[in-house]
Picture: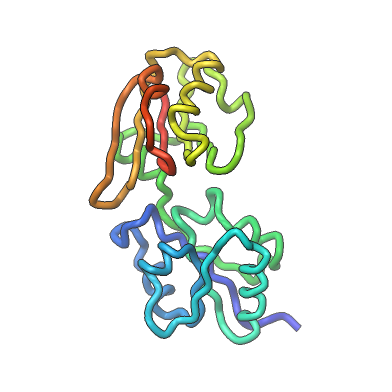
Length: 209
């Protein structure tokens, strides 16, 4: 028998509550069960809500959600937009699409391009957060524009070296965008050659053109 309860995947934007849609805020406030990263729960969950931290045990998180669906709607908090490299893919694999609702959010990549007053309709959006990327996406061609999610290993210096090896000019423009939407937001502009010598900016957005 199909459950009457649903999974509501809520995009919570780049981090600051200022960038969360009103419908997302209302959905979180009305929830009985909330699932998300530790930081997301610390920021958005309220006292009295049953919570579950999304950790490396994704199967365990999915099992928890399945158990709770017998009694409650389950709200799953996702950084940025759920459609861009999130747990939504795992949820769609485990649960029927009819049981899932999605409330979109503002992705960090979208905010990075907004900060630069750049359109992103013509950009290639890539996540190197815990994954490699095909050579075709990284190879230089005139007018090519990239928006890249970075991580500790695939940091901007490492990625800049890969782009140079794939034919990007040393003078290509780079913006490193960290802590977007927070009070300590940093946006650093440089050339691709300079980016190879720039430490830090893990878990940030790298824009290249």
